[in-house]
Length: 75
Image 1: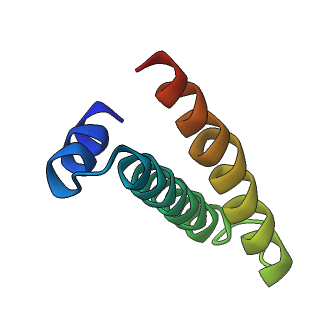
Image 2: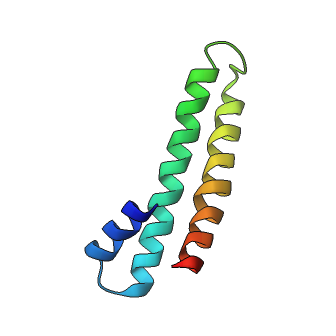
């Protein structure tokens, strides 16, 4: 997360937009990683597309958004 935070700090000047960009990119990154995990798992089990939403949404909300907010509170 520190690499992403440093990127956002370098890309945007205003502090409020830095935080917004960081949360957006962090949420998208973790959502995509959850989707990729579902693609791997769906080869053997949980093949319904509903599970893609579950894997993506849980990864985006939990470690992505909430984890990003906790990271911003610490920095």
